[in-house]
Structures are given as C-alpha cells and as structure tokens.
Image 1 (cartoon, rainbow, N blue to C red):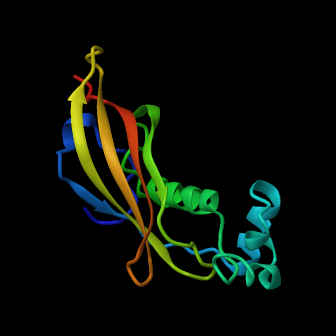
Image 2: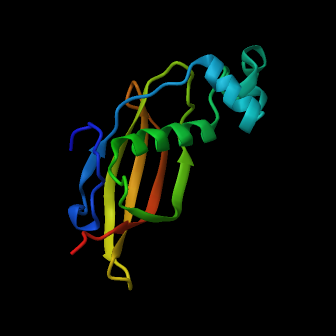
Length: 154
C-alpha cells in the first residue's frame, strides 16, 4: 500500500494477516526533543546536552514517549483507520530497542499479525505490529496494537 493519505480508512474485511504498510518519515529537532522532555519526561539525558554526555547514551537522546507519539502520528497520518477504528484495546510488547536521536528521520513499518471477528457483528479485532526505524534502518522501537475495526456496512 502506498503512503498517501486515505480519505476513508480500511474496513475490517480489507485487512489480511501478513499485510504490510509503511509510513512517511518524521523527525524531531534537538529543541523539540528538549521541549518534549521539559513537559513529559524530565530525565537529564533528554534535557541537557552536556549532562547527557555522562549518561549511558553518551549524548542527548529523545524520550521513548516522544518516539511513541511520533510513531503514532505517522501511523495516524496514513489514514488506514480513519473513521473505521471503533476503539483501541491496548498495546502489547512495547520495547525501546535503541536510542531515539534528535534530527534523525524515523518511519514506521506495520504488519497485520492477527485478525478475528468479535461477538458483535459490526466489528473485528486486529493485532498490528509497529516497528519504528531510524534513517539507517535500525529498529529503535516496537509494539503491538490491538484495535477494534468496523466491518463494512451492509
């Protein structure tokens, strides 16, 4: 599937196990990384470039929460579930695998792991794997989304 924005999302019936999608790219500048950290995750290695040199990372790194939100934004902008998502059920296997660096392009690759009908005939459940990669295609973040998706209207 291309990365252009859809005006209407896909219905449950449109998805197939193994189906893959890819997003456009995004990046956060050093200033944006610091601003996000000031509001949401005040760890010194997200806030202070000099102090971060003494951290495990050896440099300023973005918050894992920031990469989560950027990954979600990239997914949302594809429009795959626009007006067809019924409800989020949860996240599984959320892992921060490598540092999220300022001024580094990221993108998300998604794959449908499971598809099942629910007890309600107007929706089904999907399990979708998110893998976020940096510009060198290193996997920096991963999680599985469980979401209820509308069935195609009769």
